[in-house]
Length: 474
Image 1: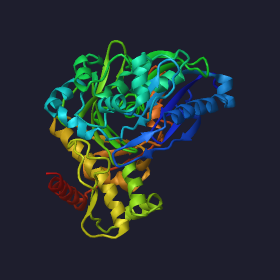
Image 2: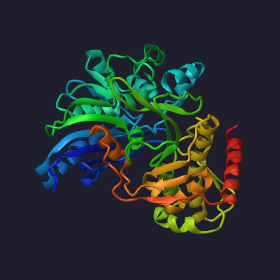
Image 3: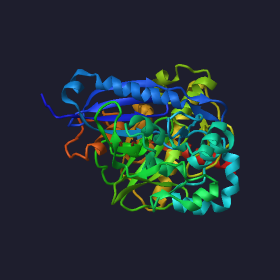
Image 4: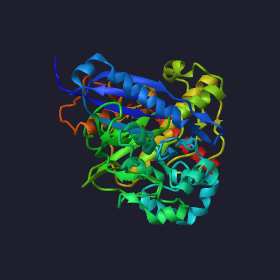
């Protein structure tokens, strides 16, 4: 039996906090899980309890540390992957939360942000992000304007605010420093992606005081020691960015698709930042000297759209039934998926979600799944039009377990779709970075490949979807 120490990955997501321990070959030795509540106060106001997140972090770390194998061999290093674009405010001396955590899904500042539309092009150039309420700038300004505890802490010089990753790092590490990684800082829309620091012009534009913001660190960096044990935290990354490295270095011409609460397609562009007016450019990895970039498309309504449908359409068994429904030959109607607003390449709130065409309730569910694929395909088409190429897609996330969804993705995109047997792409990716990018973390077990098949009816529905979507948003 090997005596090589393990690597710990902490994956702090929207619906759960998890800790996973990987051995020196990238296999999961043990894991722990704590679910988290998501508070939907309205269609646009979505919060989480920052204290609940803090408690969950300590609980999962402590649980895996008590595993007999872990106690025997120890943990050499740790990595942290975070839900992106969510923000928090806390007391920089005590760590006490000073208000709700505003989720990345929260859109309460959409109206307020419209005043910055004339500067949208410059904002996009500096940050790689379109002007959007999903990112942190407007959320931080809202906390300053509306939460008395935040205002009081600012007056006394005790305020810290920024990406949720900053709050997590403060509580996770013995040093209790106010710091954040490049990937999560980049999702605030206050961070200059070329200079890799807070941008004075953006801070002034949005009226966000710079003093409470965390100090920015590279993704691969010694952040400090875990408070629970003498374990150095060696990498911090956004969840989608970390997933790029779920199987080690990404293969050329391979897009990474994650089908989680939202759906994302990331196409690595290496050391070159590709600028695009409708897509996101971001950092997957950085150290003191270099960076690795992606071009990214985002779909707001994936798993969140399924949750919406299960409640709205009163279909509590929808997930269990979808595999059989996706195998049926009957053509579904179209579903205009505006859950959480339209992400790239449209960046609009959109009207209420609606079914276009006739169909039974089970066909609505199939239409919803196809709508996620259609929105992803629109992003892939946009990438291809910009001169990028993808021959293969690596898919992960909860909805990727649906064979019928993966096959439709292959048929629609014309790409080979590969679903690894190892589904923990985010955790494995940040663990791989924390461990120093080892070259021996090959796949433990081969996954499943979906080859594109002729499916003219699906492609016709995609074109009809684009026409119908254009009609309702123009």
